[in-house]
Length: 181
Image (cartoon, rainbow, N blue to C red; front, side):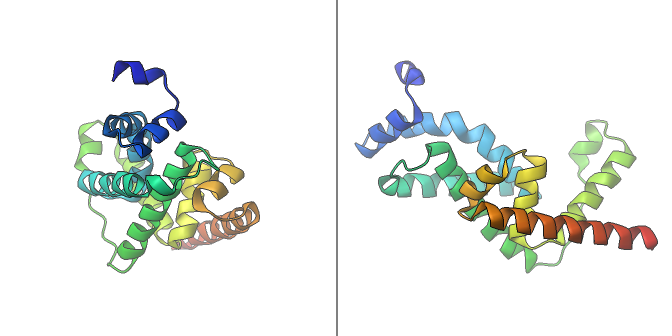
């Protein structure tokens, strides 16, 4: 498989479509870290991240025959990932929100102030709709542009801008409420 490392994602996709499973394994190796890192922004445990990651790559493999290369493989994979994460957030939203102290952060020496800020940010993001949380995360945490976010979510740039504006306004309001308490 070493010789494939110089091949583009598009080359590997074509090989996958012709039945070469090693090509898909190479695509997974190339994108796994990035995709799991993105997914981790929406999960509470490493097990959830792994489960959603497996779901993403399974859906990608199953849908590969329908991939038409109108966008890059990476963008197409992010769109699948975003949809899986949105579904996860919608399911999670139906469950009561609980905050469990992340022991690994303490073990890594993260001080209590940073831990409190992380819990605050998480609780504020949980107050947003799943789509708004996804947009805020993509724009302000992942650093995607409005256009990149729109492509990955399958919405217009105007929709991203409007939802991001409303979400920031909602976050500001929530922060002010917490400050006044």
